[in-house]
Length: 90
Image (cartoon, rainbow, N blue to C red; front, top):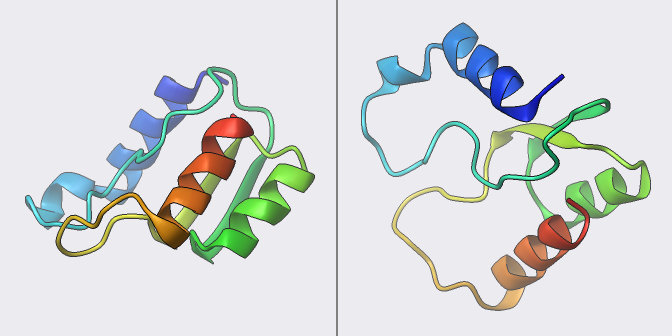
């Protein structure tokens, strides 16, 4: 399934528009592969979640606690490691 189609379906199903404009950045946070064949779910987008998903060749991770919560943070340290791994593994 195409990533854009799946992301739109998830957004509609969860009615993310009902949450208003908050700082959690609900919805697709990091674009990956265009075609999604394998999906994983987790509570948190922590480094371990990302590492395990990469090992399992997952195309999309759906999490409750995304990467971005609250005010913007610099992309350094743990955040840089998370994004680096996500982008490197599509």
